[in-house]
Image: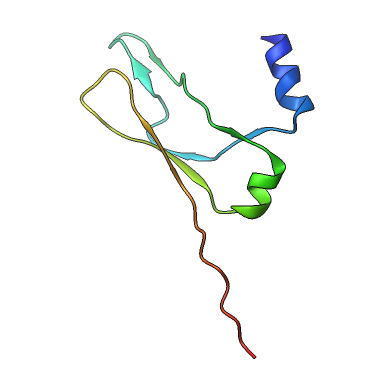
Amino acid sequence: MIDFSEFIINCGLSKIPFSDPTFTWTNVRVWARLDRTLVNHAWHHILKNTTLQHLNTNSDHSPLTISTNTEVAKYTP
């Protein structure tokens, strides 16, 4: 884990903010957030409003959905 953490730091990666639910996996007794989405600085610069959502399903594992706001600012002369 130390090597992986150093890799994330050295590559300038960061997590995308997420919305509830907090956990992405359960076996009923244990709840955990197993999944993460990492992006670099360029991604954050170009797609500033990216969000991550953990979807509720009937499965023991919640899929992730990434949303981006790619709306371009309107030109006003």
